[in-house]
Image (cartoon, rainbow, N blue to C red; front, side, top):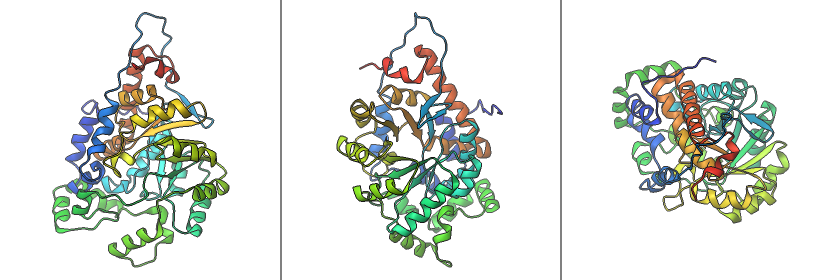
Length: 382
């Protein structure tokens, strides 16, 4: 594997700054934004970085093993790529770039229903090892068609969303006409003209599309009609009947994303889920909600011995992952970090960011004197 690493961009902060200068403002704000006043988005990362870890210096230390096993598969690191919609808006073929990088580094890539590459394309790029995140369709017929495609592609894990029961109120997206699908305004066009490299790359790749959903979209739709179609076709609110129906139809591992209370955790486990992801959708849904590290501690303590408790939302760096693992997560998914990398460095962005994250995480493990990922909770300062 080529060890692609740009020393000019050794942190997520450096990648973020370069990305901001390479993509139009409306696209960057789509990636960056939370809901209402961005309060929970900010708390997510701030609270993770309040976690303190205790190093053991004077002891025999055999070295660090970053590998982690979940659902019978051993991954090379305890972090993966969270599902993100409209990835191709940030940079052409971003979905494919990140899927390839995740596969080469043997970490999980979760494909969103509204990503810009199809189930079949990502399955081919990852040799059937990607996970699929389902926005629940309003009608059972479309649900079953999507499940059949995921099953035929050989993907091992189905992730269903609990944390998007309603469309969020995101002021920047509303102002930019980016409440999915995008609407081009004079302001947006002016912003695009200031980013000629992004424009040329998008022209070469073609306009981003909801690739998985293309077979079900009526022809000749303009952006307004497509938005109405999406609103009518998908219903994000889960209930026990919907989860039970998915459990009956899905033969692989089933994960519920967006669990933040013991009551919901108990419900999804009784319905047959194989694990859950503590998540608040990257702070994009409920400004008054808790940052993810808070419910993670409680849920890991109560349910960690019974199931696979994972986390996303807020972690952006190797040290952030270590703090989340020390707080009880078995695995951590990141979203914006990977997108900063691709927007900053294009086709090399996935590889660079994967290598950077591994280096950062390994340094923390070595500094702590922690040999195995599963031992990180022993280093938590209570």
